[in-house]
Length: 98
Image (cartoon, rainbow, N blue to C red; front, top):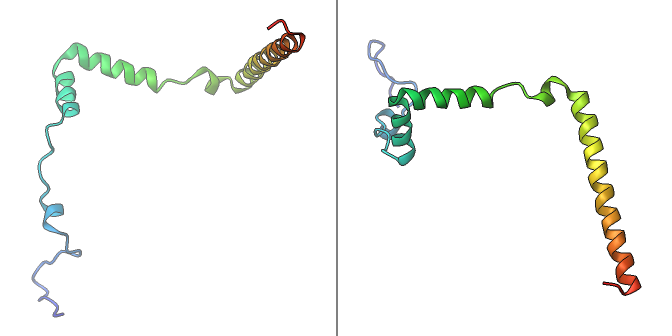
């Protein structure tokens, strides 16, 4: 491999042609819809409002201890109801009522 003269610029990495000159983006339904949303001011504002709502600080992030306690109580109540219901049905089955 010969080295080029110092006055010639050569890329540090020999990239394939498809990486140097990529094809233009395809016209997919998602891109067409995105272009439409950006063209209509009301839709653009609605999209940005959804993004703000999605990135908000959630209650569980602001109050992790309260969230943990409430979650534990809810799970305990639901589990107790499920186990109690299963025992009730099992008791009815053993008694022959079901």
